[in-house]
Image 1 (cartoon, helix red, strand yellow):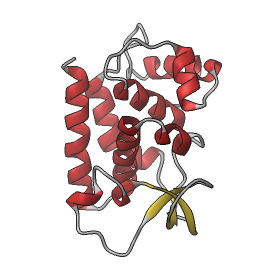
Image 2 (cartoon, rainbow, N blue to C red):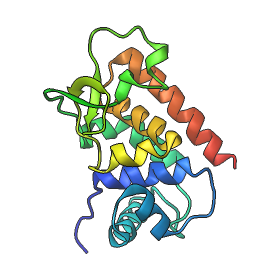
Image 3 (cartoon, helix red, strand yellow):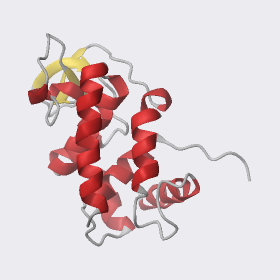
Length: 175
Protein backbone atom coordinates (compact mmCIF):
# COMPACT_ATOMS: atom_id res chain seq x y z
CA UNK A 1 0.00 0.00 0.00
CA UNK A 2 1.26 3.47 -0.88
CA UNK A 3 1.00 6.69 1.03
CA UNK A 4 -2.50 7.80 1.93
CA UNK A 5 -2.87 11.58 1.90
CA UNK A 6 -5.71 13.37 3.63
CA UNK A 7 -7.81 15.69 1.50
CA UNK A 8 -9.37 18.99 2.64
CA UNK A 9 -12.88 17.51 2.49
CA UNK A 10 -11.80 14.99 5.14
CA UNK A 11 -11.60 17.84 7.64
CA UNK A 12 -15.04 19.11 6.55
CA UNK A 13 -16.54 15.63 6.97
CA UNK A 14 -15.03 15.14 10.44
CA UNK A 15 -16.24 18.58 11.52
CA UNK A 16 -19.73 17.68 10.26
CA UNK A 17 -19.67 14.51 12.39
CA UNK A 18 -18.69 16.64 15.41
CA UNK A 19 -21.47 19.13 14.56
CA UNK A 20 -24.02 16.30 14.62
CA UNK A 21 -23.30 15.91 18.36
CA UNK A 22 -23.38 12.11 18.37
CA UNK A 23 -26.71 11.83 16.59
CA UNK A 24 -27.03 8.70 14.46
CA UNK A 25 -25.98 9.34 10.87
CA UNK A 26 -25.49 7.48 7.63
CA UNK A 27 -23.01 8.18 4.83
CA UNK A 28 -25.86 9.24 2.52
CA UNK A 29 -26.98 11.84 5.07
CA UNK A 30 -23.46 13.31 5.22
CA UNK A 31 -23.33 13.29 1.42
CA UNK A 32 -26.65 15.13 1.11
CA UNK A 33 -25.90 17.69 3.81
CA UNK A 34 -22.36 18.41 2.60
CA UNK A 35 -22.86 18.17 -1.16
CA UNK A 36 -20.16 15.49 -1.39
CA UNK A 37 -20.81 12.21 -3.21
CA UNK A 38 -21.50 9.09 -1.10
CA UNK A 39 -18.47 7.40 -2.68
CA UNK A 40 -16.23 10.29 -1.63
CA UNK A 41 -17.68 10.16 1.90
CA UNK A 42 -16.70 6.46 2.09
CA UNK A 43 -13.20 7.12 0.75
CA UNK A 44 -12.78 10.03 3.15
CA UNK A 45 -13.80 7.99 6.18
CA UNK A 46 -11.33 5.29 5.17
CA UNK A 47 -8.50 7.85 4.88
CA UNK A 48 -9.46 9.26 8.28
CA UNK A 49 -9.43 5.77 9.80
CA UNK A 50 -5.94 5.12 8.42
CA UNK A 51 -4.81 8.49 9.83
CA UNK A 52 -6.40 7.56 13.18
CA UNK A 53 -8.67 10.59 13.12
CA UNK A 54 -11.79 8.40 13.35
CA UNK A 55 -12.35 5.08 15.11
CA UNK A 56 -12.38 1.68 13.40
CA UNK A 57 -16.18 1.76 13.01
CA UNK A 58 -15.77 5.05 11.09
CA UNK A 59 -18.55 6.57 13.21
CA UNK A 60 -16.76 8.39 16.04
CA UNK A 61 -14.07 11.08 15.70
CA UNK A 62 -10.90 10.44 17.72
CA UNK A 63 -10.99 13.75 19.52
CA UNK A 64 -7.43 14.00 20.82
CA UNK A 65 -5.85 13.09 17.48
CA UNK A 66 -8.21 15.34 15.54
CA UNK A 67 -7.68 18.25 17.93
CA UNK A 68 -3.91 17.85 17.64
CA UNK A 69 -4.14 17.83 13.83
CA UNK A 70 -6.43 20.86 13.76
CA UNK A 71 -4.28 22.94 16.10
CA UNK A 72 -0.82 21.96 14.89
CA UNK A 73 -1.20 20.70 11.32
CA UNK A 74 -4.09 22.36 9.52
CA UNK A 75 -2.30 25.63 8.68
CA UNK A 76 0.64 23.74 7.17
CA UNK A 77 -1.35 21.20 5.17
CA UNK A 78 -4.06 23.58 3.90
CA UNK A 79 -2.66 27.12 4.08
CA UNK A 80 -5.07 29.83 2.95
CA UNK A 81 -4.18 32.09 0.06
CA UNK A 82 -6.23 35.29 0.44
CA UNK A 83 -7.47 36.57 -2.91
CA UNK A 84 -9.40 39.48 -4.37
CA UNK A 85 -12.21 41.39 -2.68
CA UNK A 86 -15.46 39.53 -3.44
CA UNK A 87 -18.97 38.98 -2.14
CA UNK A 88 -19.34 35.96 0.08
CA UNK A 89 -19.96 34.40 3.45
CA UNK A 90 -17.77 35.65 6.35
CA UNK A 91 -15.15 33.27 7.68
CA UNK A 92 -12.15 33.08 10.01
CA UNK A 93 -12.04 35.97 12.48
CA UNK A 94 -14.61 37.87 10.39
CA UNK A 95 -17.38 35.57 11.72
CA UNK A 96 -18.63 34.10 14.97
CA UNK A 97 -17.58 32.61 17.30
CA UNK A 98 -14.28 34.51 16.82
CA UNK A 99 -15.32 37.97 15.61
CA UNK A 100 -16.88 39.26 18.84
CA UNK A 101 -13.82 38.22 20.88
CA UNK A 102 -11.27 40.32 18.99
CA UNK A 103 -10.89 43.92 18.01
CA UNK A 104 -10.89 43.44 14.29
CA UNK A 105 -9.09 45.80 11.99
CA UNK A 106 -10.17 46.59 8.46
CA UNK A 107 -9.58 43.06 7.16
CA UNK A 108 -12.61 41.00 6.35
CA UNK A 109 -12.46 37.47 4.95
CA UNK A 110 -15.17 35.59 3.07
CA UNK A 111 -15.75 32.36 1.23
CA UNK A 112 -16.71 33.44 -2.29
CA UNK A 113 -20.42 32.82 -2.80
CA UNK A 114 -23.00 34.19 -5.23
CA UNK A 115 -25.45 34.22 -2.31
CA UNK A 116 -23.03 36.07 -0.01
CA UNK A 117 -24.05 39.39 1.48
CA UNK A 118 -20.64 40.51 2.78
CA UNK A 119 -17.59 41.87 1.00
CA UNK A 120 -14.12 40.78 1.93
CA UNK A 121 -10.93 39.16 0.84
CA UNK A 122 -11.60 35.76 -0.71
CA UNK A 123 -10.49 32.66 1.17
CA UNK A 124 -11.09 29.38 -0.61
CA UNK A 125 -13.04 27.07 1.69
CA UNK A 126 -11.66 23.63 2.49
CA UNK A 127 -14.21 22.21 0.04
CA UNK A 128 -16.24 23.96 -2.66
CA UNK A 129 -19.64 23.12 -1.10
CA UNK A 130 -18.79 24.57 2.33
CA UNK A 131 -20.73 27.87 2.00
CA UNK A 132 -23.95 26.09 1.01
CA UNK A 133 -23.57 23.39 3.69
CA UNK A 134 -22.86 26.05 6.35
CA UNK A 135 -25.90 28.09 5.36
CA UNK A 136 -27.98 25.12 6.55
CA UNK A 137 -25.96 24.14 9.65
CA UNK A 138 -24.78 26.79 12.12
CA UNK A 139 -22.78 24.34 14.25
CA UNK A 140 -20.80 23.26 11.18
CA UNK A 141 -20.37 26.91 10.17
CA UNK A 142 -18.85 27.80 13.55
CA UNK A 143 -16.48 24.81 13.38
CA UNK A 144 -15.31 25.78 9.89
CA UNK A 145 -14.87 29.42 10.96
CA UNK A 146 -12.66 28.12 13.77
CA UNK A 147 -10.77 25.94 11.26
CA UNK A 148 -10.13 28.92 8.99
CA UNK A 149 -8.94 30.96 11.96
CA UNK A 150 -6.53 28.13 12.80
CA UNK A 151 -5.35 28.22 9.18
CA UNK A 152 -4.69 31.97 9.02
CA UNK A 153 -4.89 33.58 12.44
CA UNK A 154 -2.27 35.50 14.33
CA UNK A 155 -1.39 34.70 17.94
CA UNK A 156 -4.48 36.25 19.61
CA UNK A 157 -6.92 34.83 17.05
CA UNK A 158 -5.23 31.43 17.34
CA UNK A 159 -5.64 31.42 21.12
CA UNK A 160 -9.35 32.15 20.80
CA UNK A 161 -9.82 29.58 18.01
CA UNK A 162 -8.04 26.87 20.02
CA UNK A 163 -10.21 27.62 23.06
CA UNK A 164 -13.41 27.54 20.95
CA UNK A 165 -12.34 24.31 19.23
CA UNK A 166 -11.59 22.61 22.55
CA UNK A 167 -15.00 23.62 23.96
CA UNK A 168 -16.79 22.03 20.98
CA UNK A 169 -14.63 18.91 20.85
CA UNK A 170 -14.94 18.39 24.62
CA UNK A 171 -18.72 18.69 24.31
CA UNK A 172 -18.68 16.06 21.53
CA UNK A 173 -16.41 13.76 23.57
CA UNK A 174 -18.65 13.93 26.66
CA UNK A 175 -21.79 12.83 24.84
